[in-house]
Amino acid sequence: MKLKITQKNNDLILSDISCFDVALSLDCGQAFRWNKNENGIWHGVINNLAIDIEQKNDEIIFYNTTKEQFDEILENYFDLKRDYKKITDSFLTDAHLNQAVKEFYGIRVLNQEPWETLCSFIISQNNNIPRIKGIISRLCENFGEQISENDFSFPSSDVIAQKSVEDLSVLRAGFRAKYIIDAAKKITNGEVDLMNIKNMDLEDGRNELMKISGVGPKVAECVLLYSCLKTQAFPIDVWVKRVVGELYPQGLPECVGEYKGIAQQYLFHWRRNSEKFRKAEG
Image 1 (cartoon, rainbow, N blue to C red):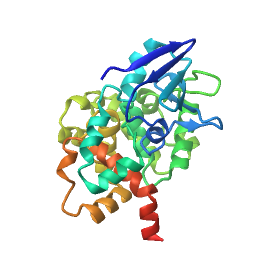
Image 2 (tube, one colour):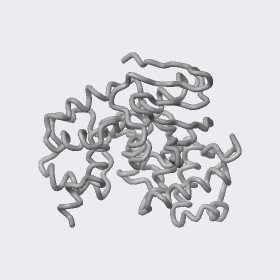
Image 3 (tube, rainbow, N blue to C red):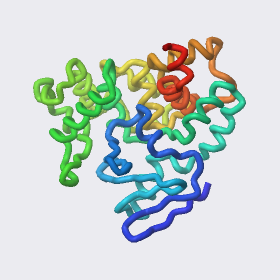
Image 4 (spheres, rainbow, N blue to C red):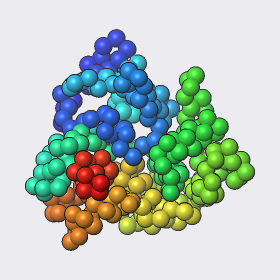
C-alpha cells in the first residue's frame, strides 16, 4: 500500500489513506499520552518525539515533522503498512462487526513501545482513563527526561528499577507501584525478555509477560496487541466480555481470522459507545 506523503514547509501531510481515523485510534483506550486541544489538534509523545497531529477531511497533518521522523517512528507507530481496509472489509460478513465498523470506521491498532505499554496497562488495572493518564503523566514528569517545555519521555525500565515503592508515592498509583517496580526489575535483570516477545508465538509471549507480578492474561494480551503486532491477541475486559457473551456465545465469527485483536478494538469501542447498547440498557 503506497502512501501519498507531501512535505509542506515544516509539516508532513498524509493523504489518500483509507481506514484511518486519528481521533478514534488515539482515544479508544489503547494509549494514554494523547490529548486534544480546543482547535482539534492531538498532542502526544512517541518515544522522544513530541508531536501534534490534525485530521482535516482526507488529510492527516503531522506538524513540525520530517520525512525521516515519519519513516523511523510514525509509520510504524500507526501501523501504516497494514491494509486495514482489506481487514475491515472482511469483517462486514458478520452483522455485528459490520455495524461496529460502519459506526466507528478508521480505528487502527497502535504499535507502541513495549515497556511503556506494559507499564501503562499495569497502571490501568481497576482504574479509569482520566486517572490512568494522570498517573502516567506524573511518572513521566518525575522520572522521564524533559524533551520540551511541557513534554517528558517515558522513563526507562532501568531508571524505574532503581526506585522504591516510596519513591513512586508521588504517582499516587496505589497498589500498582509495587507491580511497576517488579516489572522494571525483571526486565532490567533479564528475567523477562520484553524486547524479544515480538519474535515469540502468542502463548510464549503471554507466559513471558505473566512472570511479572500483577500481570494477568488481560494485561499480557494488551501488551501483545498494542506493542508487539500480535493481531491475534484478544484482551478481554468487562466491555469485551459483555459483547462476546451477548453476541458471540459460541465464539467469534470465522471472518475475523488472524485479526481477532483488531476486531476486538471495534467491538470494544462499539460496546462502550453505541446508541444501540445505551438504549438496550436504559
